[in-house]
Each structure stands twice: as structure tokens, then as C-alpha cells.
Image (cartoon, rainbow, N blue to C red; front, side, top):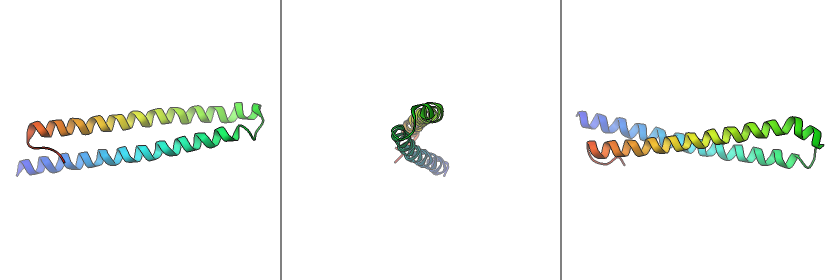
Length: 94
């Protein structure tokens, strides 16, 4: 019975990490889309306005994108650790 509970816990944790990974990918895609739109705005606004307002926003979005990539990498690494642990413990996590 304890093996089943351990398996269920690991399966739920793995499922959570996969969902987190998918959501991070979606958010990362949205961040890139927003960055592209802001870069397109460069052609329509004066350079001074773009530099003062849009440049800091783009920098912030790029920083957020890097953090999301790290989050995605972290969750993928954790999923691999869970599979490795359970593989050694008992069977294979699906």
C-alpha cells in the first residue's frame, strides 16, 4: 500500500511539473509576442520617446523571458530526477 501512495505522490508531482512547464512555455511565447509588438512600435514613435519608455519595458520583458526559461529548465530537471528516483525505488514513472 505504501508503494502505491509513493507512486501516486510522484505521479502527481510529475504532472504538476509538466503543467508548470507548459504554462511557462505559454507565458514565454506571450512575452516574445509583446516584445515584437514593442519593437514594431519603434517605427511609429519618435526615437526619444522609444528610448525613454519602450527600451526599459523591452529590457524588463527580456529579463522575464530569461527567468521563464530558467523555470522551464528547472521543472524539466526535477521531472528527470523524479523519474530517476522512482526508477531506482520501484518501477518507472510514466
